[in-house]
Amino acid sequence: MEVSPEILERWDKEFFWHPFTQMKVYREEENIIFERGEGVYLYDVKGRKYIDAISSLWCNVHGHNHPKLNKAIEEQLKKVAHTTTLGSSNVPAILLAKKLVDITPKGLTKVFYSEDGAEAVEIAIKLAYHYWRNKGEKRKLFITLSNAYHGDTIGAVSVGGIDLFHGTYRDLLFETVRLPSPYLYCKKEYGGLSERCVQDLLTKLEEVLKEREDTVAVILESGIQAAAGMLPYPKGFLKGVREITKRYNVLLILDEVATGFGRTGTMFYCEQEGVTPDLMCLGKGLTGGYLPLAATLTTEEIFEAFLGEFGEAKHFYHGHTYTGNNLACAVALANIEVFEEERTLEKLKPKIELLSERLKEFWELDHVGDVRQLGFMAGIELVKDKKTGEPYPYGERTGFKVARMCWEKGVFLRPLGDVMVLMMPLVIGEEEMSYVIDTLKWAISKL
Ligand SMILES: *Cc1c(COP(=O)(O)O)cnc(C)c1O
View 1 (tube, rainbow, N blue to C red):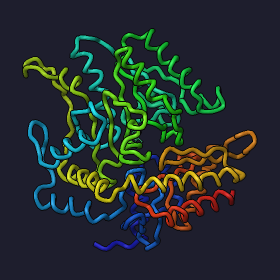
View 2: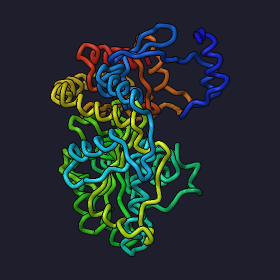
View 3: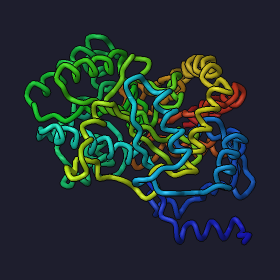
């Protein structure tokens, strides 16, 4: 059935409730309806072309319509699209599990699949909680950070710290202790991401742990609070948290959903701090941006706490219909192979340097209050008054207006509030990168 762009637009507004979208406003505006993609380019139903500068919400890695990734799905499709993994298995899920154990930090030896990042976090939370139960300890407290984001299901929201998204549900959530958001705290109290600030934050963590022997785990995003507006941690923070969690015998859950698969310059951010968590959550880039798949990796120690005779009922009563889906696992495996074949991380290095260089130019703009970067992830914060740092009123949607101006010039962006996000596919060329940066600079300069 061929349906005209006009009818699609009408039906989109009539039937489709979009995520994180004020539908009243959406229905009053003209929106993009994507139809196809090729490399770093996306095309809409009207034939307009855009560079995908946010990797289709941070998940695309090697570009759209990649021949090897397409082929992996096509080949698997000829065999079977989906078979259950509840008590049985499938070939790509086995191969991928082995591969993930090979490429993640030493010590992570078991893979539990799900479909989205939030589920990977839910599973980590439940595994951590259940682990202590199986060890005969009743613990219940999770330690989190202000401004954390781990997804939108209720468990993930419980450990989240963005009041705008999470505040409404407060009554439904379990107890957590929230430490300050490292970037914002260090900037406010120490004028920057200093070592002294790291020590201060770690002392705060220790104080909580001394008080609360019922702590299950500390849960953190790895390296950067991305959804909060690209707020990187000071160096050494993660390493310090790992040391303290070990010392106090509590688990460390690292959420690498946004940072995994090369986004920070290494395959996973925790490598840069030499940290192995007890539980690690993967999603987004796991399938190169092709299909929904997530994974929670864990250690032998945690896995073994769930072993017992059937009648002991110690096992993990958790699973989803599509857990370990064959097509998704097949493409995830191909995604990792492309990293090796195309030397993606090696080629990314000069692009990260180029990004750093070019980001400096944004400081000169009148309405830029801060510029932040971790690897190939960047955030440019717009402010109404550069001198005082006064933000634009929330209702004005300044970030979104800037994004729309970029759309007009063929650059697809989606900001986080008034933080302009650059999260380009790792495969992007330097010329396209420059076009994205020039366009964004131009749009901000028009404010
Ligand atoms: C996106 C994200 C999630 C949630 O993943 P979904 O697939 O959207 O459920 C969790 N944690 C982090 C750090 C994320 O960036």
